[in-house]
Image: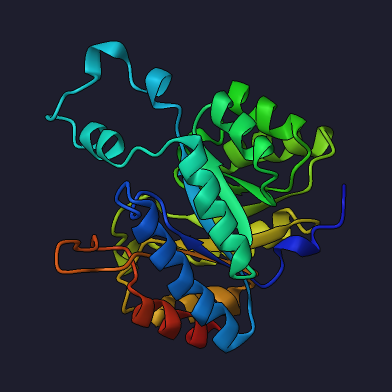
Length: 256
């Protein structure tokens, strides 16, 4: 397995769809995160999300408004050339460019852009066609493990190890937002003992003002820290688990 130091002490600012389908707003978020990265001299990444929406959404479901994810994905759609602008902005800010692809075509977009890291979401970590395509890139992979049993995580570990992939795991509770009493932070230590040859991190969805959680995750041995971030405006309100720039600044400071 390749050296996995690319993962150690990495802060991931997860932009998801909070660019609101606007390249300009996305660049504003990236610049805000870049200021935080420079202020604390940290290794930071901004993570996008890619879906090939023409095939990702079943034809029978396109245009439906009764399933909240569909209008959110359709209304924030960006074309590859627009995502290229966001990737360029991430690199101009001196940060690592990465994305979560949710289908095989989106893995190809990650490769076309030469992204530094590919992230696999918890919901996709046992999507074996997607995992096969991602593993074949030999890009460093970070895999979230929300909702997965130890047996599931063993399968993912063996799948990637046998393919010689440089990868890391993130402990994650797939609730949005995640209540503090269900964060299971002790599982970070369990993963470190079970998979001692890879980096273990923490992807949080708890209250954006609850920085004690990040401090505890660091104390448990997490070396990667991921949070959703956004930039509120007069017309844009952040969801209950995303951090504004001030909260992201406090989060980084708490971990350090």
